[in-house]
Image (cartoon, one colour):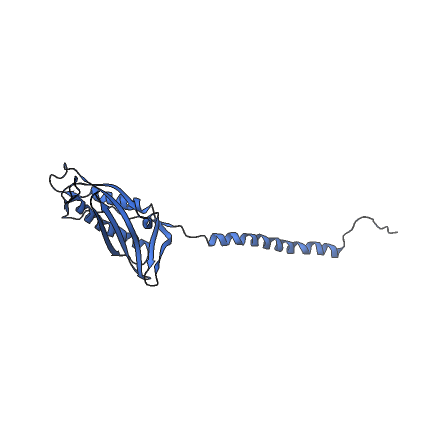
Amino acid sequence: MLHSVSGPQTTRSEADAHFAGLPRRRVILGGLVLGAAAPLLAACGSRPAPVRQLDLGPAPVWPAGTILPRRVDIQAVSTSELARGTAIAYRMDDTDPFTRRSYRDSRWAAPLSTLLGDRLKQLNARAVLATGAEPLPAVAILVEVEDCLQRFSSPTQSEVTLRVGASTGRQRRLFEASAPAGGDAEGGARAMAQVLDRLGVEMLAWAASLSPSTGKA
């Protein structure tokens, strides 16, 4: 005689259903994990490029044949509101001449007054003095950078314009010059160094021609 065994039993159809659900759950869970990671991967892929820190390049060279009759003491270099900070400013003269912009992915490595002041002092330290000029009293000047702007005439052509004022207390003179700058911020930085070196020599020669006591030629 056969006796039935009592207790919980699992039918084949129930077992099949149980195991058949495992791969589906794994797929669903895997999809959830990938879905959660997608925004992170997208964020990594859309991370902005690091901002380039530009300066004025190698130290300036004093031009041969330029001799100063006396020493010049650059006491301070300041900037107007337009030239403050580290933004590299430009203007699209060909399409939007009334809007002053700044590069998003390039900036000056230090405030412009610091970069220009350091370079002017380097240039002044390399100045060639006339015989007997060393013991003479120096002419003290204050320098103010009024504006520094890269102006585009087309997407690939621009020029940098620099305007600098120098004063001795009784006299003040404005110096301005431009140089071709290409189509990007790096070209603007190179042109800025060229313009500053040219204006710097002109400014120092002017100051050295003045009397330290009266500020007059």
